Length: 107
Image 1 (cartoon, rainbow, N blue to C red):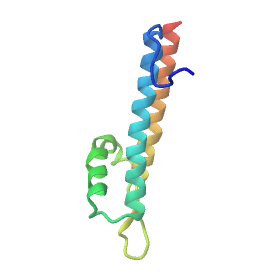
Image 2: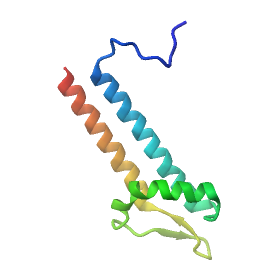
Image 3: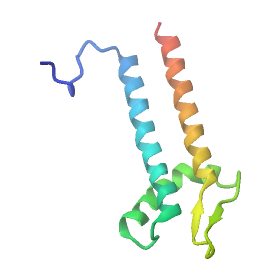
Image 4: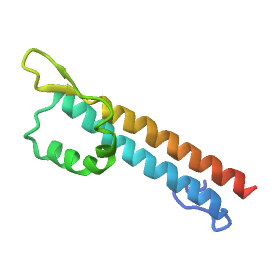
């Protein structure tokens, strides 16, 4: 049975680069998704929540001026970050375009 976690040494550099891009995108999208979820339903005082906010700031700050956050509930403490959802979409599109460019150049 082949080992799934080892890459064959004959795997072209372009394929490794594509895998790396998808991996980094998955990590970034997961962090932003946790941010969106926590802003909507979690306490902002929890340590892990503050860690996710701190890590995700560089990923979402360029998109914050695009649209304002939408408050939820009567007290307005819960927030839907539309700018973070836009960041997720644009990061995905950027990664997809980069992977497509690598595929074109690697042919």
